[in-house]
Length: 250
Image (tube, rainbow, N blue to C red):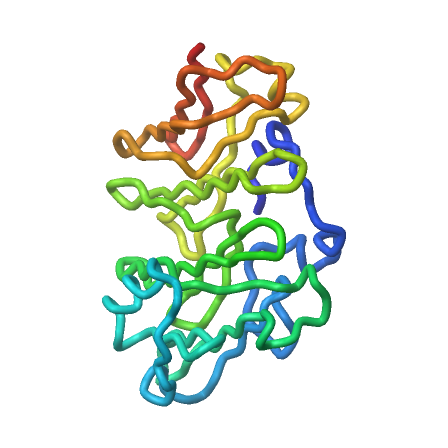
């Protein structure tokens, strides 16, 4: 499900365990085994009322939780999410209080958003090094792995997930088609304005500093082309007819 652009334009540094079959998937159902290193379980009990509701120390998560008190709660290292059918999704952090099998498995899970139109939760996942995010479907607990918490277009047909915090200074970018369920990743067209050598060797790094100018254009306000390369004055992403293309302005 990775975008073509990820392989052709961005040089992605993937942890050693990412070479396993688990990490080749981007959509999966929770099971008894850790999912991408996260402990995610479906519980046959109602959400929220059973949890103690310990106050989160994350200000951003606290703001989100305050708006969805009936469907999400923080209980210490555990995040509980309401699922359909009077069930719950239990996500447990792996930190100093909850021992991890290995240092690379250390991670936190913070509720970043609830998308009522799509019935998806957005969970920001902080890793030992780096970041990723999960889109979790409220109907059954299906988990979609993306580079970072996505930003929806104004018309909510697409979403941009951009993560610059990847090892070795490269980045990861995906454009999600929210018109289907589960969301899929749109392909990237070869850019006619960004230097070809930068595209071929994956030196483009885009960050989370982005905004949708309209329903079809995303502006990255702090892009970089890697050390020693000229920085563009502007980097735009155009999303039209189910395809995406980057536009560089120097």
